[in-house]
Amino acid sequence: MKYDQYGRPIHNPHDHYAVEGHHGAQGYGAPPQHPTGTLIPQGQPTAKLSMPSMGQLGGQNETPWIRFPFYPTAPFTSTNPYVGSQTRYYGATVLSTDADYQIGTELIRTVQFDIPCRLIAVNGFAINNAAPGGALANASTNLDGGYLFRMEYTTGDKLNTAARLAATCLGTMENPGELGGTGYTIDQGATLVLGITPLTNLTGLTVRIDITLVCLEIRGNRNFNMP
Image: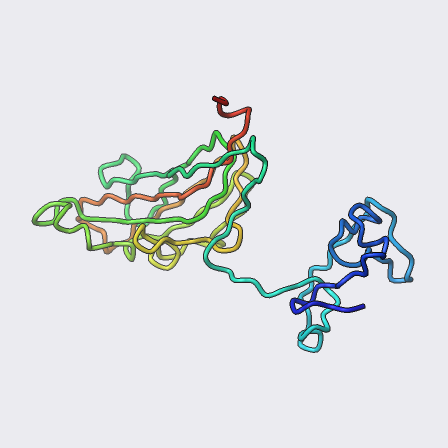
């Protein structure tokens, strides 16, 4: 079998396995085979998750793995004319005047999604509202080193495996904190849980913390009206 520059199998056009739908191959690489060499019946494709070894690179890769840029984030977009998409900014705010605000204690904020979407980037910014000159004069001073941040999905799937300083995992609109790859899939009706822990270096300040989730909403005939 021959391979292209990305290590993908090149099929003979007369090869009936290259035709979409045969033996679960769907036209993407060779048909799956059992270790004994027999073909796996259609409808039972398998996934080989191990990345190629060094010896398999350079066109000798038998597994359809290719190198692909991680940034910028490239979400899936439907080519169906009846499926649209739009950008929407979801988010949450923490104020030092909130009843649950306490230094060293995690505050929980939840964000509900009514429309399925993909999370592209997570941005955050914290300011001292009571600083001399007011918030506008101090808008360039980001206190993201003053609190911990984590986020998890409704199912418990954690985007952050543990809470970390916000400055290490959040971006700003000037330099968005992209998630990379295809983004983070969020189903309709799902909820993201944001965990924010103010640290001691925010003690005595009148703090405002804003978290903004940059999302690409997927819209269809069930969640918007056709003209």
